[in-house]
Image (cartoon, rainbow, N blue to C red; front, side):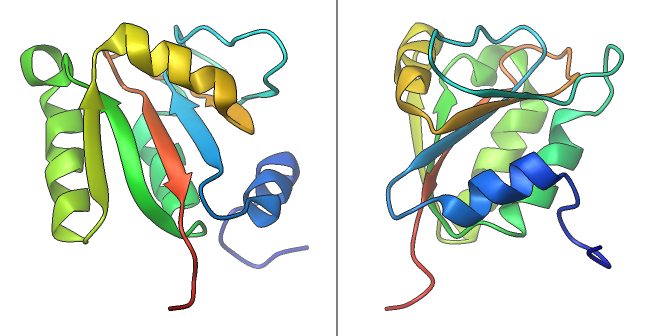
Length: 133
């Protein structure tokens, strides 16, 4: 049994198996899951677990070189805008695309993690980096 960090066995396995440029989606409760993409469904109740909790747990474990977010966050989700700014300050590349494009890109992910988040556009595609230079 792990003492701390990411405890969810399936999510831990997916993160550990990711290679450079592989993608993992962390999404809100409404993000559609494309056929053939595994879904790690963490949603228990509306809002539980929140996007931020799941994102922080995964971000602490995965080398992330860039993320893709929906451009609609600027009008609809200030928390996601703040997350993008923080990631830029961390040296992570932040791409913004229309939400429909984000949904299309999610079809290439190794998995989609479904949270209970109910705020609009609380979705991010994490692009794996490397831990060496």
